[in-house]
Image (tube, rainbow, N blue to C red; front, side, top):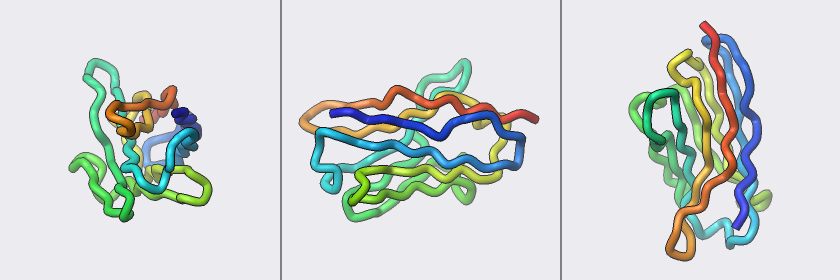
Length: 114
């Protein structure tokens, strides 16, 4: 299983970024996909997830600002991030739980300047 994340970068507060994560090696449409992040000084935390029925969950700190989506044809999960805040700075990872274990992408850095 391979997860390849991209789309991070440097943006000013209030700006937007769109993260992408392309999956290979799994029957993508069957699995819940998730985005996590690790911000400086904190443990890795769940940001949002989307299951095989496209049902979505969000953590309170991103509700109304971030949107998770998936394209099963492209085998890709997205995270549209709007109204970014300096507190959103960190490394963002895509994740799936398949075949009894967690798989992680390599992470993509998001930096939000004030």
